[in-house]
Image 1 (cartoon, helix red, strand yellow):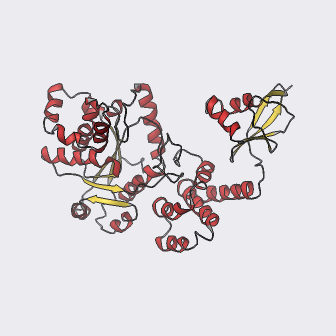
Image 2: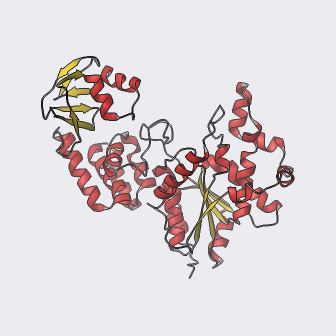
Image 3: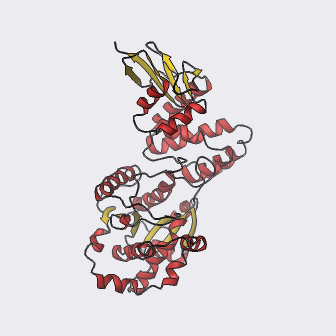
Length: 401
């Protein structure tokens, strides 16, 4: 049974930036038929963050009304890579890596979307049509769009201004993503505004090929936890769906105070009336408001119990400046070793030598709360000694002799 209600528009307004077009969306919602909602992802990197989840939560509401999400893995277009925001060619990744990243995306999407009901969820790959498309079919597809239309894309214009190359496979990427909408018979797609050009190509191809154009909802994009650029894995300023409850909580606590209200509006379900009340207290009680925000974000993805636990852990650890009891233990055989070697071994390839040396230079490494600024310093250790790296990472020494 499909719920034909316009009430969802009020819910969507909280995170919506624009709709193309609102009247078309109202007609779709009033039609009484099951809508097909396209959710397309290229899998150049296996990370989704809470910014991506804004779109998925809106899709989840549509699923709860009886509509179907078509989760499209762009396994073919990933070989090209969307040039959005890039001034240089994306590196080609292997098919094996594409498959691994695709599975990681699916696993993370399960935190929000209903994937256990085939009536509400369908997994597709665009290699289904592109692997079998002949050269003549591709040329016919490209003949429908002009070079000037594709070159109008903002990042291409920026490259032209800078005298940088634009490769032809990058140029046709929006056409390929647009055709995906036709292939899926998409009624609706919910995206960040940085994908608007590509999805407008979807409307273009659907109309040219005799189908009704999909409605496009663009959602609000916020700065990352550094208060600057949007959330990005490469910048490290994101809250990932794959992050643990502790990491989510800790990352929220790094947020600049002026973004607390914005994050409450976009990334939580706290009633807007209550958000307004909190907005009046941010200036006088920023830490209390930020703890509330962190609790709400963790609760949304991991439940109230996990959120309660992480709040207690954070307050006890950082407000009381205690060392947590549940820190990892590293077994060593030599009591005397360079501090650099110990920290490097603990991170086990997760940080480069340069990153580790920078931590020492910044005074972020301590042994039993005594700062070690020289990475080559040889330290003498005993059982139970505690290394601290930055504000939220510890490990305990166990000597096995």
